Length: 494
Image (tube, rainbow, N blue to C red; front, side):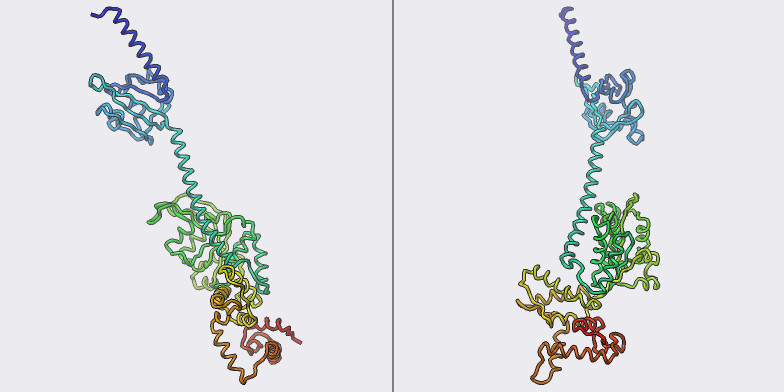
């Protein structure tokens, strides 16, 4: 039999053991609860009291779930039978939770992660040990990280779009460069650009296809206070009708079939800069109202998003259509037309810029020679005359194509424009057959003959150049061509 001293010794050991356990529990940073088989609190450590604010005497002997685990984060009831802590008391297994809340004594909730571990004694389930920790800072860090990720994602998408626009701009500059020419018609256009560029006025650029309307738009943007911000182009003729809103305003993921990610619209991308609406006359009538509202209010919503976004953009539009006629015929909204055409600019066709044809052609030739690594080619006087005498229905775009085609067809010294211009060969053959006999004219003789022929036609027309009875009509050439040749030959009215 054990002695009394043995019992006293065992009691002291048990007391020291309990004190040691209490010291360990008190030193822990995590909150710790002990539960009996019914889920009543048997002990609580200092960290749990500090984290949740419940005093020890308020918890001991009370069902823990009813104190701080009775509701979900949204306030809805949390049934005790669904509680993972009480599941441990039923099945004797470890249960963990990472997306729940405990309620403080002040009535506010606290996001927590916890583990409920069964307590066994002599093979019987006696209760559970609940260890939890406050994850508020972690959740806040997660939210900040998610917000930063979304911001970075949005910036990445915007940078990708700006990169695409930058590539387009680089290609444009490589193909066209600066505005080239010294004709009076071009000078009038440049003076209009200079007058309107420094303002925020909406500009409508009018002109035939191929005259360089985008180049005029870029000149307006580059000479404005917005030149450091992007100029974003929208080719209204190439956007499918069902994608119009997404292209202009953007969308959020899942807003429609195929919207797998958020998309920044062109209007938002142009914020602080210029939005260039190319071929604006091609916008479907039923979509013009939505565009008008966004331009007037400088506000819009992405598809599928309730948040209104504000932007600051300048509008420059371009078209080869007669929008005034489109308005009268009901194909274009009158209010949108007046919103866009505050300052119209007419870009002259190439046939009215005869003096600019050769400088433009030489610019394109130099570019293509460098691009293709060719030896320099010489443009002959006859070739230049062919260019100046052509009608250029495709304007500058056609001239560029002709020069590139001539370079491909030429040898190593002379640019064969006669092979690249349509109908040039037929015109040469007709000219050769018109000269009968074995004799031919030198270039100076031909020039004197041409000058005399022009003067004769001018005298016959009473020195009237254009019109039905003008010299240009008698000679079968355009008035602008006749005016240019008169300047070359220094022909002046007496």
